[in-house]
Amino acid sequence: MASSVVGAITTKLFGSHPQPQALALIKHHGALDFALDFISVAVAAPFAEELFFRGLVFTALAQRMTPWLAIVLVGAFFGLAHLEKYSFLAIFVIGVGLAWLYYQRRNLWLNIVAHATVNSISLVLAYTVPQLVKS
Image (cartoon, rainbow, N blue to C red; front, side, top):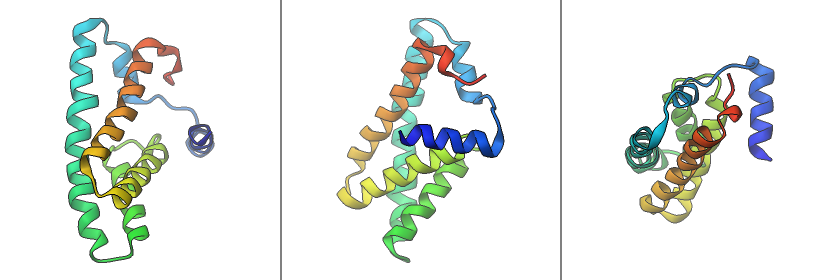
């Protein structure tokens, strides 16, 4: 439901637009491409991004301001860091959710697993149902 709302808002604000990362994945075929994409998208990225955004940035912000403001700011920073205005809102929402999870549990491993799960689902869908990818 939330992803549908975010998608509708983004389309209303910016119009229909291809997602460059998803379009690149459409060109990848076979087990080796999937394995390499999986390592990059579902293992390396969640590990590095959680260490940086939640472990470092959120922790620093939360020491200087209210936790909720830190959660929103790190979510915005996470969205902006992905350098794609058409998916900013969706990535912002994910970033807020991951920051909230870290605030509640204080466990980066839980965040890494949650982030990897979101990325894995997106990757598997891009490979198995490419027509879902906006073009």
